[in-house]
Length: 153
Image (cartoon, rainbow, N blue to C red; front, side, top):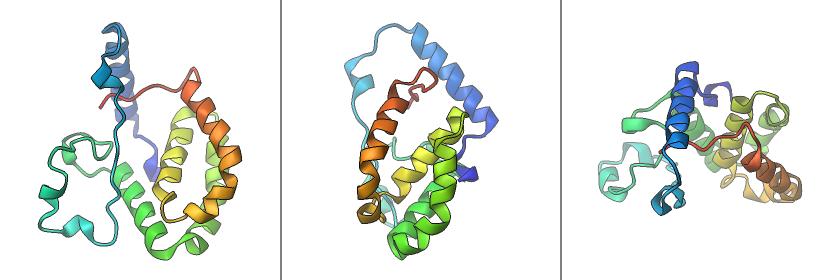
């Protein structure tokens, strides 16, 4: 989870980009459109024909220019571990850290834990589903929180 927290230089960049966007005026319709990410697990990273799969999808991960960062690699690894080994191996060591991180006062640690929830969601769906009544209101609160900020893509 520590690798999923934005490094200080990226936090500064996101805050600067957000300030520029806020000064830019009203949001355009294309700025508000949802972005759908596809999971890449079980050996899809080294596929030769991977370029043709998502040619128009530059927004596939958090980092610019398609570069791998510690954050992106950590999230992809957690996604792969959850998909391959399942909840019985992934959740026991992860849940205490997630619970602590989701209650942290640092917005960037909470954001990284939310990213981790998304990374394990497919591989641990059955085990996470009973917790959705508690998670759903929390996630909605995070969306409307004063210290949460939209990310520029």
